[in-house]
Length: 329
Image (cartoon, rainbow, N blue to C red; front, top):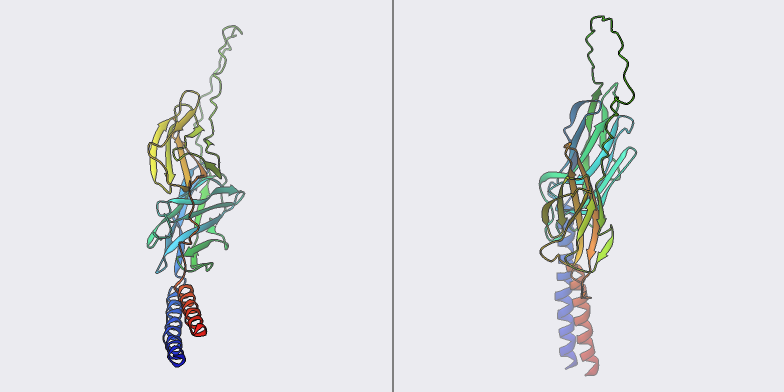
C-alpha cells in the first residue's frame, strides 16, 4: 500500500508541476507579446488663434494591441500665452477616476474604462481641454503631454504601456482693430440736467457652475440621491452620471438653483457626475463630483486572481492531502 501511495505522489509531481510551469511560461509569453504600443496625440496638431479666442483641443489615443483600462493625463502649456479653462473626459472613457484639475501651466485628469471587463481598444478621444488665447506669440507655443502621463493596460500591472506622444502648437496673433477717421466737427455742448441724466444699467453677474450635493468623495445612503447645484439663472444644465450611464437635462430657476433625482436606482459602488451648463451667452461651464452609493452587503470572496496562483495552490493542496493520507496509513 505504501508503494501505491508513493506511486500516486510521484505521478502527481510528474504531471501537475510541469503543467504549472508550462502555463506560467505561456502567461509570461502573452505578457511579453503585449509590448507597450500605445500612443497619445493632441489634435489639431497645428492651429492659429487670435487673442481672446476660446478653442478646444482633443487628446486622442491609439491603443495598438493593448487593452487599456485607465489613462492618467498631465497636459503642460505656457500659462503666459494660454489659459486652460476646463478639462473633461472623452467618450472612450466614461469613468472619471480623478476629477480634472487646472494649475498654472498644467491640466490633469484620470479617466477609466467602463470596467475591467470592458477594456478600451482602438482609436478615439480620451479627453477634451478648452483654452483661451491670452497673449500674442512670437513663435508657435507648444501644448504637450508631461512625462508622468500614464496609460495602464489590462494585465500589465504598474507597467506604462505608453510609448510616445505627439504635441500640438498654437500661434496666437493680436486682434487688429481698424479705425476710420471722422471729419472734424465743431460741436456746441448742451448742458445736461443732473436729474435727467440716465444712470448706466447694473452689471450682469455671471454665476459659476457648482455641484452642491452629493459632495466630492462622499457616500450616498440612498441609491437615488438627489443631485443639486447652482448656475446662472435660466441656464440649461446637462447632467451625466457615469458607472451607470444616465444623462438628463434640467433648467436652472430664477435664482440659479437646479436639481435632479434619478428615476431608477444606481448600482452600489463608485459613481461620477459630469455637469455642464450653457448660459444665454452661449458659454459652457463644466463641473464634476465623485461619490459612492453604499452597499448593504459586501462579499469577502476575492473576485480576481491569476492562473499561476490557482495552479500553485492546487498543487500544494493536492500534495498535502496525498501525503496526509500516506502518513495516516
